[in-house]
Image (cartoon, rainbow, N blue to C red; front, side, top):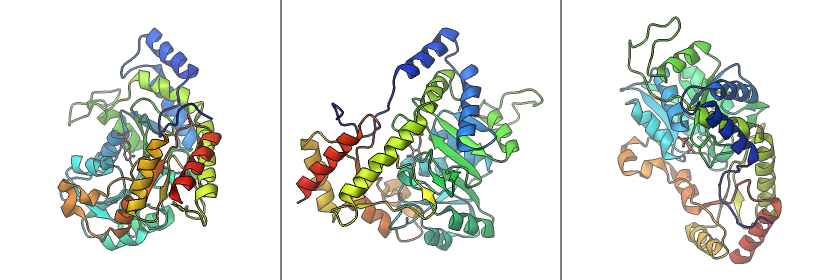
Length: 366
Ligand SMILES: Cc1ncc(COP(=O)(O)O)c(C=O)c1O
C-alpha cells in the first residue's frame, strides 16, 4: 500500500528529471526549443490526428478554440453547468454569451436534450465537457450541432485517453482542447493542446498564440495576438509523461473498476455511467451518496483516516456572475454537486490503497 494517500497529485520520476535537465542543459527553457515540436508530434500520434498545437494551459486552449472559430460578442455558446469554471471563463474572454444547461443524470455529461432545447438563432458553438474522463454522447451532440450549423468544441481537458467507438475524446468534434495541469492524467506543469482536422485553423493558431508575429510567408502584426506558446521546459516534461501515459490510463481504469465493484452495484454509492461504445479514462472516480448530508459526513470521516476527497464542481449557474446565463433547469447538476464526492484517483496510489479506501468507506457508511 502507498505510504500516503493522494487525491490527484502528479506522478513524476527519473525520466521527468532527465528530460527537464536536458532542456536546461540545452539552454532552451522558454517558448522556443526542440521539445515543443516533438511533443506536439508525439501527442498528435497518441490521439490519432495529423497535427496538434501546444499552448500554456487548457484554459488558453479553450480560449483560442473559440477565438479562432470567430465566436464573439452577440454569439451564444452552450455549455454544461457541471464543469470547472475555466470552461465558462473561456466563453466570457471572447465576449460571447454563455448559455448554461443541465447534464445527464447518469453520465454527468452535457445532456443532448438540454443542449437541443437551448439552441437559439444566436447559438454559434457548443462545448461538451467529458467530465472526469467520461465521454459525452457525441453521436447525438454532433448530430444536433450539424443540423443547426453549430461548431463543436470539445473540452477534453479531463479526458485524455478516453475513447468513443475507438476514437479519442477531443477528436470527435470540430476542435478539441486538452489540459496538462498538475492534477491531470499527465502533466506539463501547466499546459494545453489544441487539435482539429482543419490544418488551416492550426496554422492560424500557431500565428495567433505567438503574438501574431510575422512568420515565413505571413506578414504579421495585422491583428491582435496572444502569448500562449508552451515553453520548451514544459514540453520536455510532457514528453517524459507521454512515455508513461498508457500506464497511467491502465491504473486509473483499474482504480475505477475496484471502486465500482466494491461500492457500486447494490452498494452504498452510485458511480458515473458510461455511454455504450465509450471507454472512459476515469481521470477521477467520483461517487453519489444517498443525500447531501451523507456526502458531507463521508468527506469529514475520510479525513480522519487521512483519506483526501473533493467536492464535485459547483454548478456554474450558481456563480454570482453567471446567474443570468442559465437557460434550462439544472436539477441534475445541483443534485450531483450536493450528493457527490471525488475519491482519491492519483496514480501515486496503488490498487491495494484503493481497496483500503473502499473498506473504510463501507465501514463509515454503515
Ligand atoms: C473541465 C475543465 N476545463 C478546463 C480546464 C482548464 O485547464 P487548465 O487548468 O490547464 O487551464 C480544466 C482543468 O483545470 C478542467 O477541468
